[in-house]
Length: 323
Image: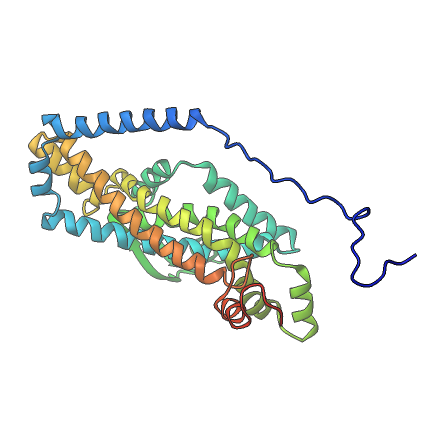
């Protein structure tokens, strides 16, 4: 039987829940870890300040000389050029790696396997000495001399002759070695980005009549950038540091070479090593800032982060309100 209007059925109404008395959990391990870290940090700072071997005045006086500044510029230029060439080569290799043609795919796999297996400093040293392998490099019809000798003709089908000692030396050799090595790593990064895109995207583009190349440029690669950008940023930072390996060529205008030269000339090895550390920290920080904004740019509309339009709509209808 239903209760009359206005009456209260106290027999069936559940009792209100009791207030939970939450007891905060103590974490003594966190305080111990914080104390240990603070003590170690204080000891490190004290060592930096009180140890006379660091020669802070000498380091600051020689850290921004014109030669060092030119070295920093060369390092940045080498990093940018090597990454641009490496990314372009990586895109080509990634597309080849995904080709249904086994010869094309196998060739790309062989290149990636070969250059990923060789340490960069060994590769740089080898390329820097290629001038000893051939004094000159001729561009023209392949096997032209053999063909002419076979048919009994005398002709020279070489269009251009390059001096090997001039090509594989200094800046050019360093750039070539870093770019060839980076292309192998970027190929795997780009391949992973391409494979992260739903295959239905390419199928829909093909149904609309887009060619394979146009589908890759306009449909697949723009969506793959969200996956490609973070590891590419890490590769760029690693490339900046790997420019110090150009001492194997050598590239005498590079930052690390200039700082080492000052240290060797003045016998102040530790101060110049610290100066090198500070320079690489500063340049790496700049690259990390650029990486952050690039990732933010290409991750728009992905994930659970609230966009400006969503935030404005929520504020317009009020917190907790309904539409």
